[in-house]
Amino acid sequence: GGSWESEIFLSPDCTKLTVIIPGYNKTIAVMLDVTNAADIKEAEIVEISGNVITSRMKDGKLLLVTGMPIYNNPDFSDESAFLPQITIDGNTESLAAPDILYNDDCTNAYYTVAVMLDAESLDVLGSLAVLDNAWVVSVSENNIFLGCNFYGYTEDPGENDNEIITKNINQTNIYTISYFPRTLQNKGVVR
Image (cartoon, rainbow, N blue to C red; front, top):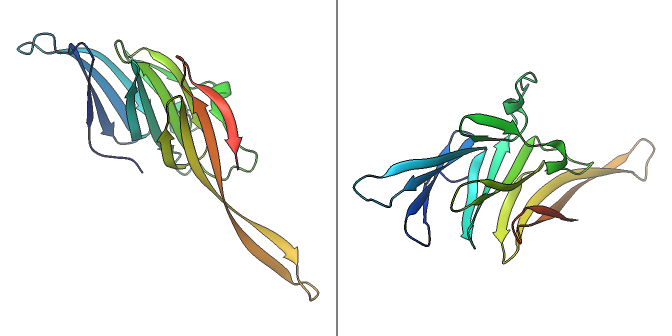
């Protein structure tokens, strides 16, 4: 999923323009110095794994949510094939294990990645990923909510010998990630 349209955010003092550019399994945030309209300069670039799902500017923070599929038979010698990453000034770092949330019953090979950037500098203030596919993303005053569908099944014995009754289960996991005051924090998941 994701959008293929760029989004633009102007800083409150009208000196910086941040452009969110979707790419193939990556999202790029480019900050431009527009102090002098006749001489626009590139100030910063941040690249985030995954296709942009949504972006929001809130109280001097740029919130980006992306979706990153893991393709079949990833090359495990290349972390970019199976871990979300952030690249700043050409330096790439994978998200650390404590910043990746998952459930024991996870069946998706898909990450939803939330990154919070300082709107004035594009410094990374926080990042979290959920090993789950968010079909719905909502941003409130202090939180990001990720609605992820979970499909499973149960098998129960039937009335006759060797009969098994299979029931499909469709559930939604709702992850809550706080972005207040200036960091991303896991607030839990509700099923």
